[in-house]
Length: 339
Ligand SMILES: [Zn+2]
Ligand SMILES: [Zn+2]
Image 1 (spheres, rainbow, N blue to C red):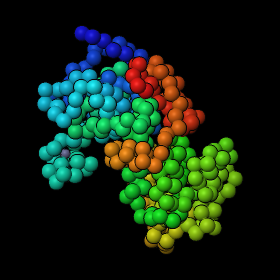
Image 2 (cartoon, rainbow, N blue to C red; image 1 turned 120 degrees about the horizontal axis):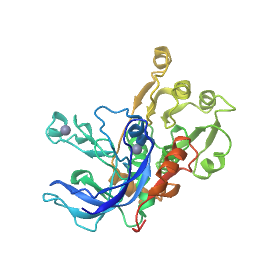
Image 3 (cartoon, rainbow, N blue to C red; image 1 turned 90 degrees about the vertical axis):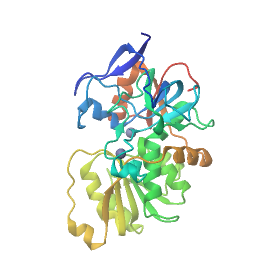
């Protein structure tokens, strides 16, 4: 059996290990991808921590995967060997639950999650189901396209679905992998943006990318600052800090929406009165349409800012992401492809 290099986690809490394992065979509705790039997402921490029902080990993480199709399963129509495609968080849907029968695949009751319920892209090869593949536009390199498949699709999807319209003020809490993409999309959608982060280092870049305001939460109360400039129509929360998120509710304008797009494990303390007084709401968002995101990114020149690591350095890349040191998305470059 031909072998490949892959990173895997053997049990909850275990470190990443580099292993040699057999190249998987695509089943009938799957394709085999020769991985070129895989983004390192906060969601990958689920594999290390074991916080997911039914998660089985050993498991290879990675759900921002760009690769070329190396082999088709027997029933994998529509795709061709050699095509460059991407796979994000959604790894497949069941096609027979109530949501799938209505065509609402995003709400599938038994969805697969890439790199969680199946092995992901921290490897030289992976299999993916054909219904979740997205073609990668020629204008984007593989390492640039990878973060758009989860971080990009999530932020773009949240922006497209929210109540803010051109000219409205939106807040972006956290300025990392998700935040720096949310800012670029928001500016191109005609929104005024206030970035809320800690420290002064990122202010210049945030302003260069189009932020009108930058509130350093170490020095000012960001909710008060938002209210001084009219209050936010929407605040997108991208940094996993329940306390910081809860404090921002007071920065929402009347009818304002808080949308949480990052995994946060701790409960949040928000008084119902804070919501009721100004008809505010708090909601969550996950996923998005990768094809729309890629097309919009090409059309409006949104490019993720990345640090590239070889597959063997996955642990270093993951650590830099978890400690918010990476500028702004870590991407594993795998093999010798066009990446
Ligand atoms: Zn992700
Ligand atoms: Zn379903």
